[in-house]
Image (cartoon, rainbow over all chains, first blue to last red; front, top):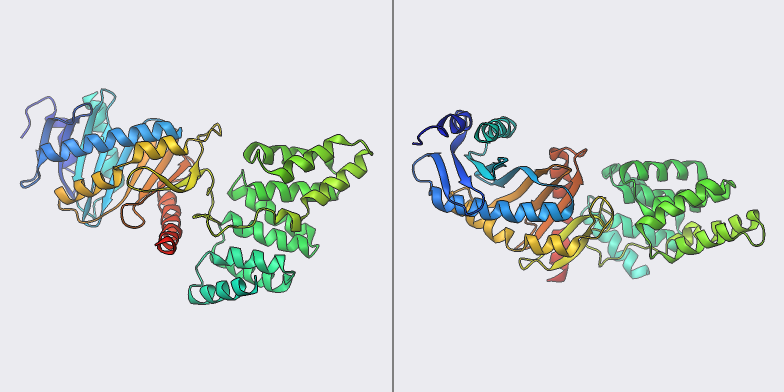
Length: 117
Length: 277
């Protein structure tokens, strides 16, 4: 479990039904800043991959002229990874089950990003 | 051409949702079989009512049949769906020339030139309309001749185009391989600059990483990445193997609709990749 001040921000996300865990990840180097994950999820590996994917997406989206990424969702057969970059560059990451309310997770991720700054 | 018509007819019979109706309708039109082309286009439109190229095809057939009023409506509809559709801009220019409204015709041609600067038909029609050496009326008539739909078939749907017939095929759809090499489609940023190669390069490896992430989390197969940007939305899909399909639209297109567009484009990409194999 994570010590304050990041706990409340992650709580916003993990309290949504169908969310298996949430993390704050340094966007620059993919290191876990804070996490609340269910057992069995390899936080550091997921963080590294999420950060790498985020960087590729950011560069591609900027090149395509659609501006910086505000939210992205990796959709999979059995769930998904939902990510919002905070203004500081920290990524707020949620691991979700397939039937999760994506709209609600997105809102809570945005609120968490605001709280993290 | 007859063989091709036969093949396409059989493909369409096997898969009525297929976009081959666009090519088939165009071939029938070029062959002068307007009634058959009309039927094919109308059936296609019923199945793909939001497909800009389907409305464009139908408009050209109507123009061939000299039903200019309905052709105008169809080209107008095409532009509502795809505001930069060059075929529709040329078609409307042709109709405006027909009724003698040279100003509107030239405005549409200029818009077409903006999005298809290398289109010789547009350049020539503009030169004729603006030249007016033999009088504006004759110049307009010559320009209309230049743009007349049978000549407009100068832009037939090529089978080699992955996304032939899909909205945004030349500006918002991109198919690439795992190494970031472009397989088809094109991408333009909002100011019209071609950014195909740059975006493709940045997306190299995304398919692999998305797959690894999904595996690591025990989430099964990855099916897409939907991303929201400040000025637009993007959707990435793996249509087959390591290939990656990117769809980009402005923020006015909701994410859910973008997913549907991506699904349709992925189907086209899959068929095309299978043909190449």
